[in-house]
View: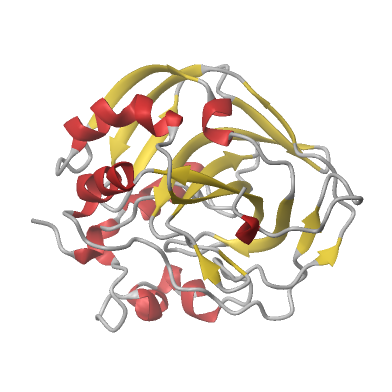
Length: 280
């Protein structure tokens, strides 16, 4: 049985490095035997920066993620420009999280930010959510990981609370069940439409941060959608049991904002400025 170090639900497969080649970033993120989410343990979050020299940024970085999205400034933002398309995909149990990775030369589409295309490569889940809004942490967070041609990362974070079952996860349930307690096992799931994972919600927070797993590289463009979706308690348990034997969490503690700008985009200024806590 794996210990609590093997917790990392999220769509954490999630964060590929913003400053290192994708292959290396994948290797570091997958190396879950060397770090855990147990605060106070030798390899816990507060000690990640001491485990390896190349992980030093986890302890010394000034732009680390996740953070509490409690302060926002008006920024020059617009509707998200993403052009997703269905693509072949596989579900992988990475031990610390469940990852859905896309295949094929055409890929699953892109997110455009300031004229740069960030291609959707994978998504993964964390429980509870890594980011919080006005001090509130939610039950789950999905990370949609995008990489540019020069391996810069842009991640869309989606928040979930316990409620009605999630349709996207419902389609993956048979594969999640077969992956339970089988680290590094991969199951082909056929064609997956990223829009089913993206869901609704146009308002979002934007800030510059980092990967939330070692090596905690900075320079990641974070977009956290304001709308809170729902996931059933059974679905959440299925994700948790598959990757870490029923342990409670695979989310990094909140990091200091350090005077970073947190911008907020609301598509209709005539409507009330709402936060994720609105629970739509």
